[in-house]
Length: 154
Image (cartoon, rainbow, N blue to C red):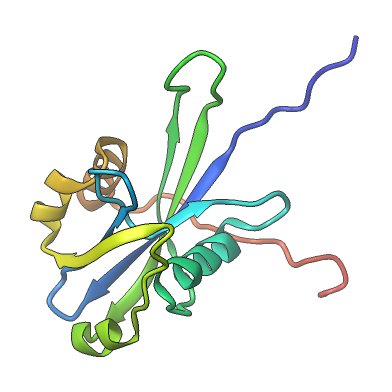
């Protein structure tokens, strides 16, 4: 009997904060919901590398992902779709004005960005993402994210 390997698409998102605790949120082109910057993890790409790449592609910012802030799992939204994992990385605290001066939206992906207080952002974000962030704020982290080195990097 031949088994099909599991296929769980995954996304990686970055939680970027300013010195006052505001979150940087983005609105994808053609979508009314807000998200954290990020997107799909490509085949054989690590979640942290995908987060860095997506933030760079969407906002023009090259930020190093820090610790894993939250990890979520979403069931399929309709028949024929796959369940999905979401990795949310803390991406540091930044001066809002200095960071804003470096942001260059990729308009094919995003039509807006803004700094938002966490309580305000939670009401604007996609419900699944808001749930992950709410839970992460209310708990003490219980896992550590570790990547194995690429072969030959030892």
